[in-house]
Image (cartoon, rainbow, N blue to C red; front, side, top):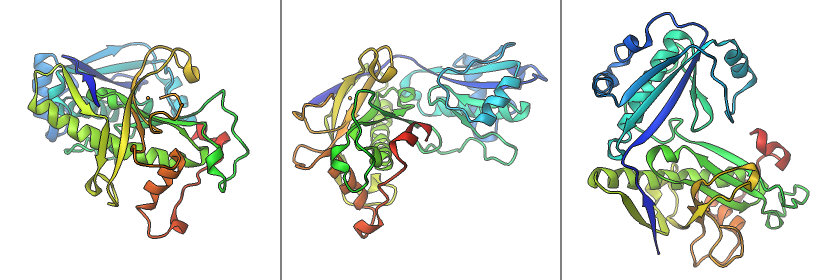
Length: 326
């Protein structure tokens, strides 16, 4: 089966820098103080209007941002915020978002500001000794974060690492793939004790999906949609530590209003159980049709390919009560 992914003609990505004082004109600061790797692109983007910097003399109010106590304390002291916005067609990715984040990093460092990525609900380090924006693109460079939730209606048995098959209340969802004109991906129905396994699997699938997607966008700059197979083959080269090849099943999904406290429709791809299992499907990631075990069996099997013995598998992260704080 083919899955159709609509492609927008223009895609916008935002970064926020919250600060106590603005000692200079931010528009004149960008792009001249950006590192040499992205300076030429920043000058061009600012000139043609695809990169904009807007100063707001008001504090920025976080909505759903996963900030630490120290970051919230810093944010309460701020009196200004600057919005760095990149607007460009998808085939210009990932350079356009790299340039925007490089500008945001430079501005935050100069003003001792707090750099926030609203899409991933997280902050980025900008201290004087921290590295600047990497020249090469890697999805692991803080372009994604992960939302782990436990189904409200699920009856989760007492946490027992030796009895993983009875728990299926965990859902882990990516945050950040929408920036690259892809749906977010989710794995739904895993055991609480498998949060680490589920996240590692999603990270691998996200990397493979994005690599293929960026190549397609460059080759088809005028495309308004893209069709992908619902079966994705993961090769050893797609995995950080190598391992055996394996397949995943992808299923389109639209979040229902109110599901797990969410409102509105969020396009996702679910990575989850095989069709016909009776569970709510997202682009859902799951075991291929030939796999006969449970979702948890599959997750452990994938983890085992990175280790020489089952005894070395770390598949038991904190208890369910600690998941949402992670």
